[in-house]
Length: 494
Image 1 (spheres, rainbow, N blue to C red):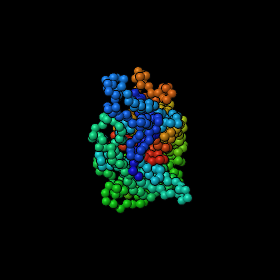
Image 2 (spheres, rainbow, N blue to C red):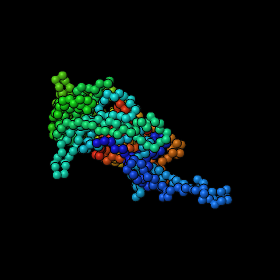
Image 3 (tube, rainbow, N blue to C red):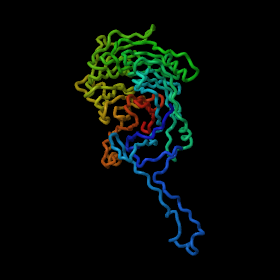
Image 4 (cartoon, helix red, strand yellow):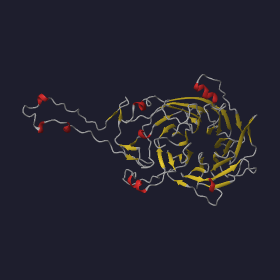
């Protein structure tokens, strides 16, 4: 299960000049099996070798008979790079290829079964890491489904260690030897599993305290399609992958049965406990007491449709926000006896699938809807009549499946959609008309492309992207999961 270097289906847009770093190439080069590529325009005959003895006597000084380098066939120019954006049609001889120069790191990891929800685990490698090769840890859960001729496959909770994530190699004479030393190691995927009853709809790891040590126990919660929420201790699996084998518990440390048979997709840990929301529009709070986990008897019940996502406030530990298929985003306070939301807004024209609360600017929240829109909200406006978003982007053409603010940059967030795109955005970028006119990107037809100036980067290549997360200890690193596996990448834009 080693990493595969990606060679196709990714696209990049720079922030200021809107220069596209991912193009369609024509014609396709051929792999010779040794990691080198044949030149599609290479001369079919070898360079001519001139024997001076063959030159007629007396003609040596005549320009008409002198062989010079200018007389040799010149190398054919490289094919013109073209801007690619989602929806652009390919010609029969065109292929989408990755521009590795815009990816300091780009790797693909695959597992036996789709893992459509995951969370990044804290590790002991330190923070603000920038050197390669890199190692990251995640906890995920499978959605195995039916196996032809074998029936239903068994689902699992999986702790993964992705190591040897090296620098992306590309042809650049400016790279020094030190950089080249970081590109040769092959990536590796190590994992351990715990049996899980039912597909894992959503999985979230409990927040880890600051400092180098890992929490012990290290809890992760899964919402199963069976309606049960299980809490697991994944610390023994981390320890075993890191060193000598240790006893591993194969059953959850606690199971929440408050949702009955109603499955759900909303799970969120915070200082005040674990929030879980189901398709029956109920939200339950589970807290850790000296005697173990305890779930409140009464749910929070202001929504009228499925709870899709939950987020704790980064500034007020008793306040949380919820997103629902009833098209609203609501804000709650767990201290309220009525268990009703304090304020709300009709956020999208269709289901609100996901939300993310800015950890650096505590009044900003981003939401993603089923119609493909991404909106940024000022929560201070929720109490007023008909609040409007401070930003609204309609770039995606299918339901938004995940959004998340950058852990340290208050103006940057990432989004993913069912249109197979992962996009990075920067709210601090403003339109410069003069610069835009000089650097306007154009499509294959020569017409200008309508690219929002806040759109930093478009990453593609995965099918049915479901979830994305920034790595909190590796600045600029994004992890995404889809039906065909994981991507781990860094871009020059962040």
